[in-house]
Image (cartoon, rainbow, N blue to C red; front, side, top):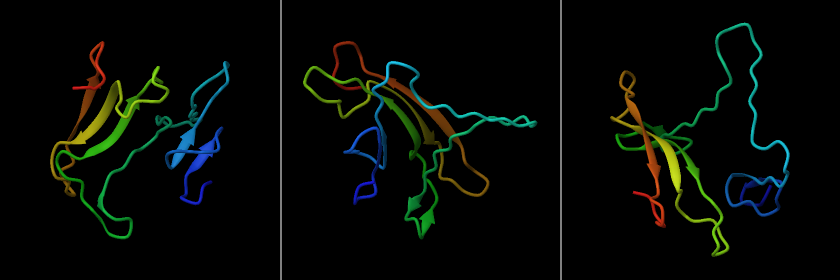
Length: 117
């Protein structure tokens, strides 16, 4: 854990709140197992609020609720600042107690491009 509260697993200089690096050629990734007699499976939940931790406020139309981005290391010696492909969930309306519409957005970068549309 760094003094800024960043946690690195498999590396000493994390660049985000949780940064995991894998160098194994064996099993890769993360696994979430659920063993129970009900119908529910494992879950990972991304949450979005405006405001602050002590005074959160509702998500607004157009807010990205969660994002999965995919980036490859380049011949320039770094990871790009954009994602070559992504999936994100977006708020379709201002969130209230009875209205929480959303949609999924998929994006890709064209072959030979250094940005996504």
